[in-house]
Amino acid sequence: MNPRRIILMLPLLLIPLITTPSPAQMSANPPEVGQKIRALGVELTPELIETTRKLYAPLLAAATKEGVKVVKDVKYGPDERHVLDIYEPEKGPGPAPVLVFLHGGGFVRGDKAGEANIGTYFARHGVVVIIMNYRFAPKNQWPSGAEDIASALRWIRENGGKHNGDTNRIFLMGSSAGSAHVASYVFFEEFQLKEGDGVAGAILFSGPTYDTSVLDEKKDAAYYGADKSRCSWSLQSWTCHPSSIRIMRW
Image (cartoon, rainbow, N blue to C red):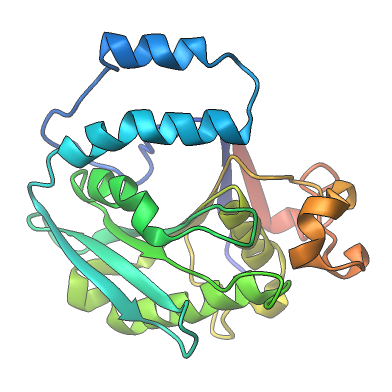
């Protein structure tokens, strides 16, 4: 296996590894939004997350989509959740890097439609973006997320070139539960494509945990099940092929 980069992130920052300049975009919060965000406090709660989404929804809806071609609901597998959206730069030199994004939702909810701003943002910076849905728990438990990533990567390898994507530069990125699925794919070789893992790097964004020995049994059991040993991995202990992994922290 080729060495890969695993990046742990809290805020959604620019990724110089794969981005190129684009036209200017909104660089700061409107003052009234900033005030409301500060008034929410610092404790991360479901109410804070939902209120933040509502505050930013009109800003994201009004943001320019210029220069981005979008293809929605492309099938990559047999399940009804096996669909993806493609955000492709309308202009750009040669094949572009490909960013595959997996949404969060506690393993039981969420949808690619709620992450459209990520597709638009990176496509305007010269990156082909694939935002994929995946199967939910409890009907589909571990390792269904890693298996869905493998299916999506297989589709991208076969079809990415049709959307100006460079299939030799595919980066995985997941938020919350999505980052757990990404971690399972990159740490467990048995779930990877047989012809090679197919990715140049992985970005773990706001993950629920980076050590499955400390899972929340109430919240995470729906996906991981009662037997945690079968899905055990830890970035702290470097138990999974440390010679092939470089970890970068922000």
